[in-house]
Amino acid sequence: MKIPMSLFSLLFTWALLGCSKGNGNDPYIPPVVINPLDSIASVVQYGTPFSGVPDRQDVVLYQVNMRTFSEAGNFAGVVARLDSIKALGANVIYLMPIYPVGIVNGINSPYSVQNYTAVNSEFGDINGLRAVVDGAHSRGMAVILDWVGNHTSWDNPWITAHKDWYLQNGAGQVQSPPGTGWNDVAQLNFNSNAMRLEQIRSMKYWVLKANIDGFRCDYADGPPVDFWKQAIDTLRNISSHKL
Image (cartoon, rainbow, N blue to C red):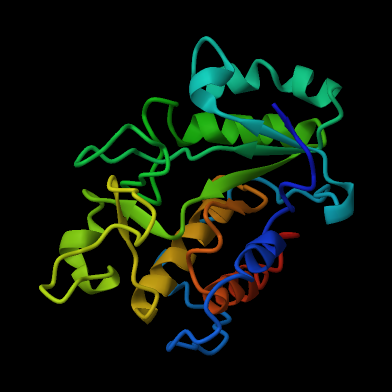
């Protein structure tokens, strides 16, 4: 499906703009963090960073829902159709969430992320994702991933390891995103600096591990504006990439 540019902006800039409706009175205002990424220092850059990322005003974006895009429903199915996407005039491919989907309280939604740094086996593995990215780059197209930054699945390991990373009620129970009816996901707590940094680390993981070119932010109005600024400033410090 071809998406009009009015609906999406490329890479990280839209994330900041998309959050502009957030609460300007958020109690937590972090400093700009240039490099909070020591925990993934061992992740080696895969491939050659793509030099052909288009300027935002020149983007022609093509959205891919892996489950329905091809009969195979996986990365290989996308690779097989890269030429047809290119023929439409697209220069950026936007992949809907590629991460493992939560089971607890789940409805099989790809926006219920169980692990931010893993690939959903339904679609293949890291090498399958790399094949999509490599094939797109060789045809002059950038690749961005869907990033679900506001909430996780109920069986994401963060909930048991770091309960304070989540919004809780007075009884200490983790909550779904308020006012949304999204009962299959748990709301993250953006007053937690540790959670913010781990999420940014996870985003950088994909830039290095699969050589992706940026992210589309799901529900950008959920997280506060200062989180997106923190993420954008940090990720754009990756000097080898035009993010």
